[in-house]
Length: 505
Image (tube, rainbow, N blue to C red; front, side):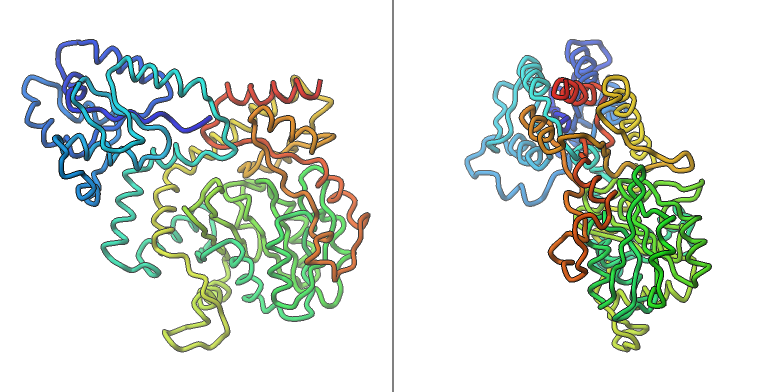
């Protein structure tokens, strides 16, 4: 469902809510709190409110129920010269920067919004807007607004701290988030980088992968893994996937090992980890390194160990749509090996061990302080959001099994695994037709991935035709990802499942 409706409280509404005597505004506020609404008290009103607190409830009692809306200095200069009430103008301009639908609740008949997108009115107006909002009920594949609004104060503070210290690439935020991530995962070292793709590249470089080396990996994944292997002149050697987990099938790995094999990269797909005990055993017996591609599994566990700590080096992505994401791109490498950790740190800064002294060839792959500050704010909510995603997935699975037990294959999570559900992925016949019919019902879906890597034009040089990896090819024709995020409610999940039931029957 779309993000919450934002309701900005004007001065007169705030005073009513703080009144010791029970009044209609308080009743209406209580009623609205039960709906999909988020309330905001403009910071520009705080000094005025404090002068009127005699014989009223403490302001903090209201601040436990509403959010504070920051006032931007730039907005003062946008107020028209002929504006009769600059406070009203400032409130409307500040309101306009919130994502989603925003209105102002006021009993002042002379209130005047100077922003064309911001409307205002009394409780009847608010009820009317709420009814319109609830009728729309837009289903979103990913929902980023609610989290941003929940964290608004932390995000603003963190971003302005970066602006103050001006250490945009080497701020304290980098060390802080690296320590928090390493502690969470249970890894000795976390090295943040600018995206998940470069995390894989630096891991390969740190292990000394060079031209003509062979790296065993999956043909069914995002192309970044195979791309980084090829970028170094090495050769991706594909092994088919397990039909249930969609991760590398350990039973097929040994037959793919040659004297040129340097490492194995299992890809944790859709949020579930590969079978690392089996894969690591094969790697140890053959003196190979293992890189865990955990771009889709941060927060997942394998036999009570966290993803990113399951191999020689773990690599993950913090792109914007990940369960833990930046507002842009980000990534990280994890390892218990101090030599590898220091090598990756140097590689991400042009191979420097001291400034302007480059003893190896590296890249410019640092995470910037702004994105680190975003991760610091978002990481405070990550554990509870992860549980919420898992609850959403469990609800999907329960409903789908009740109604479509023979027509839809729901995710198969191994009993020793937990999944972060980066995607909620089903298997279904006539996938493309089903997707089109769901789209006509305004239900968004995605396909990850419609064409295995070995059949991509970029890897035609491998000369691997259709039929080479049967499981990967079959799965690519059947998988469909349904909307999933931490704020998807059961009513909306039921709507999606009901639509699927009608289409299939």
